[in-house]
Length: 194
Length: 347
Image (cartoon, rainbow over all chains, first blue to last red; front, side, top):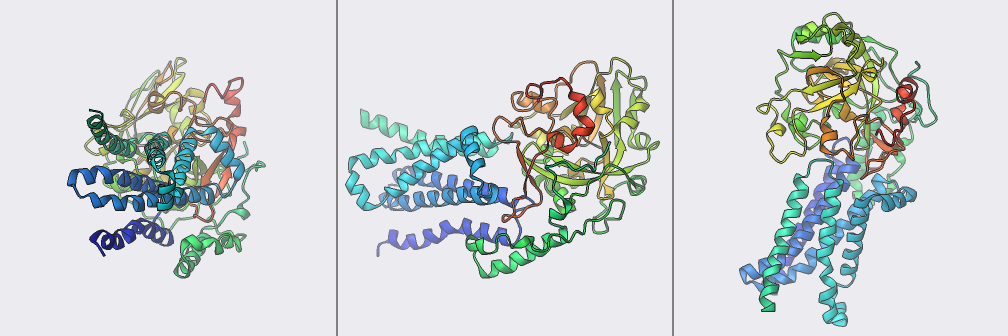
């Protein structure tokens, strides 16, 4: 077993730590007087954090020269999808109480819900096409398709900004991190073009 | 005026989870949690309502023994403790003290809901004075004691609806704003009132932030007839004790038919004016927050719905989503103030 495979056994449970922590917080009532809202929000933030980490894999690989890091990318990306799905489930179950009528209204009227829903849709497609078999089947198209992750990340940050009332600190942090990760990708393109 | 009148959208007290049952359910959930992962928790969903008909809400006027008395001058403690119950009440379940004093929007002390309780703890609220100026016969700088001395204090149980779509039911102690204002003798040019929160960056970390989306000092305002409405209240306490700093000690406004941000905290200045004051939230986002800010389920915030609200505290199994009432259910007392006004335009 090479070191990447070994390290995966460590990284995988680490990615579950936020979930375990949140479940514990729910059980021990540490989420305050509005736990439904707090839980939904926290799950969404974790989805965004994992999305940013997955986007940081390539820059990290280039900066350190450790190419094997790429083998963590799919797992981390899938965790982003995992937390995003939990975020949506928490919203549907705990905030909406499965009131589909309100969901339709929200989707239709709230720009931030729409942006979030679109981001989830993209992540789901990317998740479904993340297997080796799909990579082989889609060939070059796979790379193109998975570039959509940038759009998903942008939409997710937009979703976050739009639902902030006035405290844009966190939204600005996520926005800057994403902008930094995108900037890193610009020069390599230019280099290739030359 | 009949505050207790029940409207169709009202929640009957028998439908509301009493505090004891709420606590019971929490214990129950805790037990359940030891057996089942929360993700599998659908099994326990909906079981909490079984005994909800037991109502154990404390009647107004009784002592709230478990509520701590924070440090405050003795005269103020005595003043607050002398409160009488009033006709302004409701039979809805009170939001527990821990939630009222632990879940606050007071951006001067941070953006998180639990920041104010943490960082306002040592806020200096004694001595306190209030500057009253503008279109009145009796301008001046009054000490808190002078302001309150002539008034008897009463308890009022009001719903508080935040613009963020959550709400609480809170037993305030204080005085009618109209009674207080009559002493300043507003003149005929006094058409609006402007209120200002303490500006003290040394005590209030939020006021030191350069990134802040809102400008300090925090300013709010009312039309003079809104200020003189019998519902409008100046609070000095809650749950029978002096106000905790995070709730706006030592003196805060309570305007129950408007979104919570109108109920300005820790007031140091009141100015009677001829023109409409420029209020903090209107300045920060005029398309999202209006001067009137009346609770209105028919007018959504541009980015989220105002049709419903989460009555706190809730649990993840019971979001406590209830229908929002126009004027927060106080329409009988205040709807006439806005006769002929397009409330979509004057939100």
